[in-house]
Length: 474
Image (tube, rainbow, N blue to C red; front, side):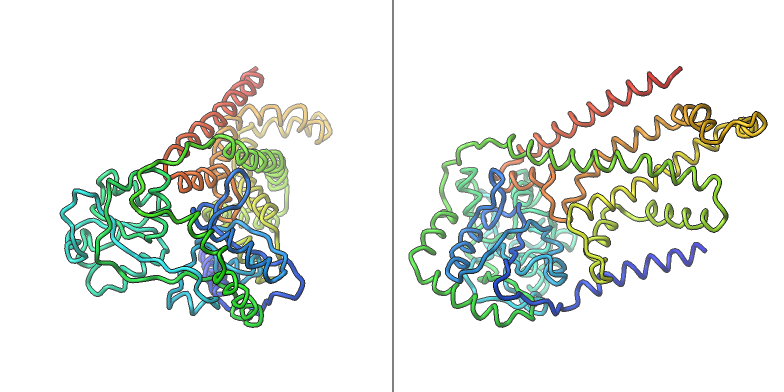
């Protein structure tokens, strides 16, 4: 039986990525609102500021779609799932500093280039490193899944010559820059345009220098489904019209400052957007909490008296959802189910997955609590001819809550933190907005705020749970 379960899970894990990588036949229909997919943490190309999307790509998109007379909307996505989002029709294009590389050209249809940037090596001002050859034996970092990483990998023998024979990668440019600032790496490979923006925010340009030698120029374009050739032709006409106008120069000058500036940007109010994002976190927390606890209890009670075949189904359910990561379950439900004809919006997908996942854990907790109650009490209810509903309500459940409350409390506190996993569906929860602010302001301070808010939330939950346990402790 266990082998069969493992085979089933393996099939799902293999099937979904294969389907997600397949080319889609979906096309943009005339007069429909097009959806632009972007990583809302990727400043300065596209990011959230005071609840609104802004950045170089966002302003350029507004000009291009105005030229085309097309309605548009922006949709936050997780960058690692961008091609899957495009192919299953959740978005119509990827527009967020999307570098054109041979590997990506096999997956999407690119528009004309709208900006080009140099991929270079950034070191500290007092570093002895003068060329790419000097990186031998040293620690080098860059952003994971980026065109900079691809540029490094294409250099024969370079990766093997580095310390540990690998490139150290991080999820955002800000984290990469912090590695260089703290001296944990000797050099970082970065995009020149993004670097300019960061130094315009933190005023630290004088502390670093770019090597004269680089990895070449990387063009940036918009990625469409390969089936949208007609729309892309019309798009390219509008894009080139905007690029040949003064508007393009104004937008470019506004977002890409000259490397060498040493004036830090004004400190912005970071707390307001974090508190706004905390509403999403709290919404998911309360909905999952309110539904998963009674659901877990009902399933545990059903399992106690159900026929063998129903018990087997429940055991399969618990095994699958306890035996696989919640993050993977979110990805399968949102990105995999559309290929089976079941499409859920982002919020319902997040809520449904987390409810089912947490209910599985709670089933086991309640099952253990029910088994801990002496069997003689169940038999006494029968002997005394006490109605089952009354017996459970007056005798069994009060004891059950007393037994399971510490374990249920641990699950509730875990739920507060697990809400951060919904970022994979493109939802702007607390931690994701903190990352966006960190990139936007080239500062790690937002992460400190995020930590304080999480501690405050778990502190409140802990106090409430303690009060409930005192009430039950009779």
